[in-house]
Length: 115
Image: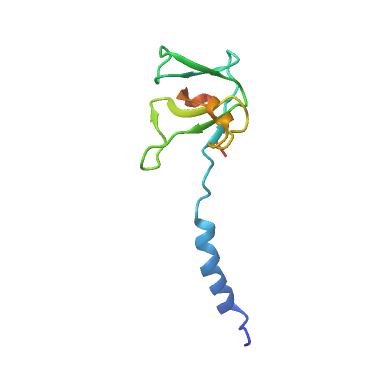
């Protein structure tokens, strides 16, 4: 079988490749805690500076942004609901180390672009 060359073949290749290139890349939901003036970012029980402190997240520690049933980030104002793990890598859910993680609220401004 002989393939045709020229414009028709090029057009066929573009028809296949262009839709793939137009698909946006999905950013990771795993993010890193950014530097703060206090030396830590407070993980709180509710989206408020007055809510109980759950943990102190340090720069470079990992957080996973929590999502609702529609796949949207759970946010309230300037706060995101996150799973925080006191390290730069979150272990698999089956690992005993995973139990060290905590779910709470963190100000968006201290979470990087996640990806």
